[in-house]
Image: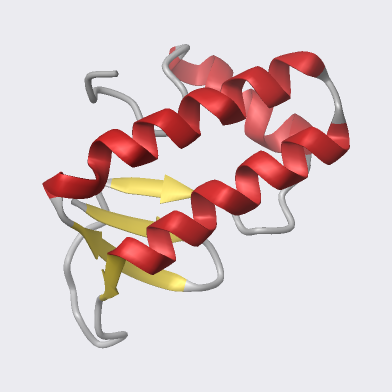
Length: 97
């Protein structure tokens, strides 16, 4: 799956890591629901760090479409909350827990 982190580029993440990303996504949902900005910052940083750690950077000149677009690391809790509310599934929708 190709994931774009706004302002940073695209990463191809293998299926073997999607369960971990889904777990981190669930933590993010909990943090956003709590309204605690510090908890949100920590949870979102963990998710973005995992995408970068387990993903392979896609060359900048590649024309591969992103299957998932994540806001930049400096996104606000409200911006991410809006994204979560769009489909109610977290920022990484459609993967089993």
